[in-house]
Image (cartoon, rainbow, N blue to C red; front, side, top):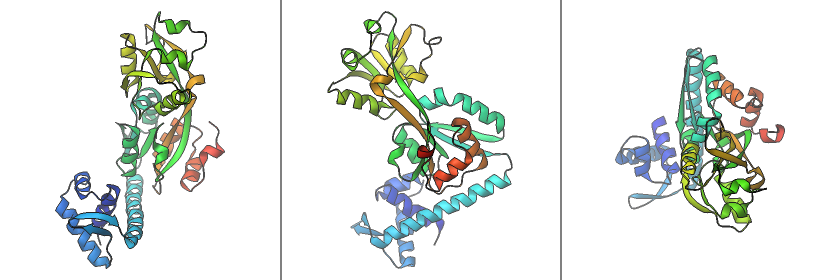
Length: 315
């Protein structure tokens, strides 16, 4: 039995029994994966995957047990590697943060600066993507820490740590009639073209839910993953923008004005996601606490042990 064979098993299961996708993800060949899985099954004396012709069709009952143990073995092997790197590398190492553009552009710069000042020998990388990508990168070990607002809670393999709350605002060009509204309403917004986030990003689900509950259909003419792109097109007069309040700076965003929209869309919680069972290195604890001071090492350890930090700590 080899670790590589276990990696093949787990990746094939993760890819919905699609061997071709697993081979592509692992940078190997489909026949090579199939052969190694067969060899492992012969060694174990059990069938892990049911087959229909050349295709895998289901996971057998003993196969589910094997996969559960294989995932645990791979996590432990990765943790051994991380512990070795941490203690042999002294103050050096690497840290990969997977996050969205909004977090990377507006929430993280001061955090990154503080972390780099404290850990100058740690190689820090920011991988930007949509929330589902962020979760997958973290689950596969391609990222150490996930930071996002949407989707992370849909992955039970991730331990969720609530960090901070934020709200949306509506932005409009100077002189736009919406600025004369005494109290901004969904009805008023529904009368204008709107530019906001792609459905997978930055609290868009709350925006959709608010309009649905009011039985209104918003006229969304353009979506983007980047608040700066949204502001650009609002400035061109293509519509009103709905963005994260932290993304608006009146000194920088000349020609635009912001209206509060918390009463329309509520608040959003940004969370950190860590893969369950992972070994958290010393400088990872530091990064997390710089980003969210209430997430001390004790709080993180409690969450990894199964407690719910969002019940003990109020944001």
